[in-house]
Image (cartoon, rainbow, N blue to C red):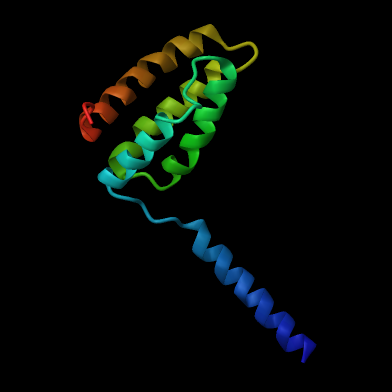
Amino acid sequence: MKKILTVLIAAAALLGAAGCSAAPATSNEETCTRIQSVGSGPTSNSDKAGMIRLANRLRPVHATASDELKAPLKSIIEYLDESAKANPDSAKVQDLQAQYTAGGQTLGKVCGGGQ
């Protein structure tokens, strides 16, 4: 009886892990709603700790973001990560800033910046 129970528990764990590994993409509207809720929180500070918290709150949104918003979110997270380092590479930050700005413009266009 213990062997059967062990096999069932192991099978359930494998099925659970398989189900969690491939999160379905959300629509643009759902992604925008999640981004707006993250951005309106108290973590959107411009200091290093605030940038780290904001990037960490955006990561789960990026994981299930719509295809159109995945790349802009990635560029924003990469910029926040590099900027928050103790000794950021200024050349890399400058390069990432252009991508960050473009990503923000895409988010504004898709999510209707005035909402």
